[in-house]
Image (cartoon, rainbow, N blue to C red; front, side, top):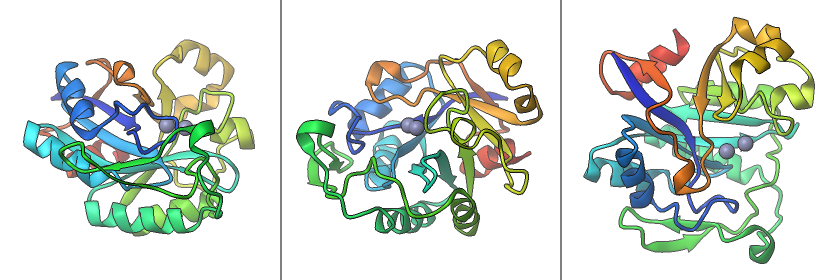
Length: 236
Ligand SMILES: [Zn+2]
Ligand SMILES: [Zn+2]
């Protein structure tokens, strides 16, 4: 069966994420748009993942724990995990690897931590838009150790992508699948970068605002909705 997914969403924790990106708003909007599964992928932190998973459980939507890591090379990588505790442990490592640069709220916005009832319970201090000290290779290795999957993000975009920054996908990296932006024309992407045809791909919204969350546009083939089924489909 085909299930509609959006595997790249930011919450109000991401400084560039809208304050309306609360756990319940995200889940309710995803349900309204007819999605079967979403993933939460804030910049360099998993601090809101559990709240959205709990909101999803209350409202009837499967939420996959994730994070969008910015590597040492300023490359964005979507890291998804089967298990919440593995995601949280990985998130702690990534946050600890960020430089000690405090967030500038006026410039970047607040970095809000919320609970499953959308109450603000705190803020993250370090600026989440910095680069981790881990390289792409180290991040792939760490994600693998935490039973996750690492997906090079928005490879069609001119910034913060593995191709824009390195010019290619290193052959020694175990890349199963790459992510294209919602706005990308697949024809244009493949014309410009024909080598991408040899990779599986997923299309995600990278939503920072509620209205940007995907509708029933992008599908993953699964027998039923579960994290294991998703991982099998992405890695198949
Ligand atoms: Zn990104
Ligand atoms: Zn993003």
